[in-house]
Image 1 (cartoon, rainbow, N blue to C red):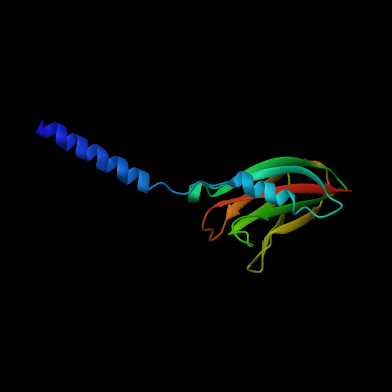
Image 2: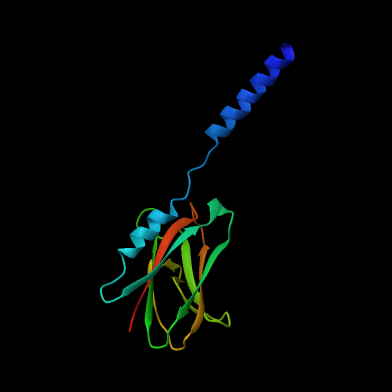
Length: 144
């Protein structure tokens, strides 16, 4: 009976400790939806992205998309507050050559445009610099 009491007490302690240690979940879908509304007039919405860095467990989140020559692409980032929460978006061409980034001269930009001069697969990479939540959303639009 004594062993059962100890086992039950230990079980309850572990259960309560785990419940109080649950961290807030990343609501990347909500941020992605907000990013869609930030696409400028004249741009056509293409795709939204959920940026979930798993609370710091991931260094980057990467997607690919086929860009067309003579189109201009716009990416918007949304995170907690008005800032990007340290989320940086970078665009690389098929040779992994950096074409554009949203972090320059020590400043984060929440909206960037890329005029594409060659059709092909491009890699959209989201990385984190001093991010608190590693959580956000983005939207991609284009215009000709």
